[in-house]
Length: 164
Image (cartoon, rainbow, N blue to C red; front, top):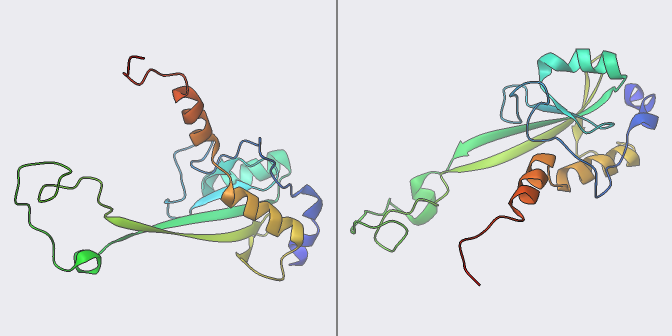
C-alpha cells in the first residue's frame, strides 16, 4: 500500500470525454482475455500488454495501472433450459429453428491495481484503497471504451437502407 501512496498524485479520474483504451493494447493485440490481461494506466488511460508495460512506465513515468483480466466460461446446455433443444424446422431465428444469437459463454472480469516498478498488486475492490484510486477505477470500469465510441461515431451518419 505504501508503494501506491507515493504515486497517488499521478492517478486521475477520467471525465466523460476522456478516451479510455481498455479493449486492446495500444502497441500489440493483447486484450483482457490474454493470459496476463490488459494493464490500463490510471494516468493516461492507455491499455498495455505485459511485455510493453515496463518500457511504457519508464518512458512516461506512469506507475499505477489497473489490470483487467477477462475469463471466458462456457454455458452448460443443461443449465439454460434443460436438455438441448432439437432443431425441428429449417429456419434461422424462429421457434423450432436454429438460434444464432444464443449466448454460448459467460465472461467474468477481475481487477487488480498494479504499482510499478516493484509490480506490487492490490486487489480491487478493497475498502483500504485510497478514494482517488477507487473513483478512478470505478469510472474506468463504467466508461465506454475509446474503440466503441469511435465505432459509434463512424456509424452515426450511415444510411440504414430505409427511404424516407
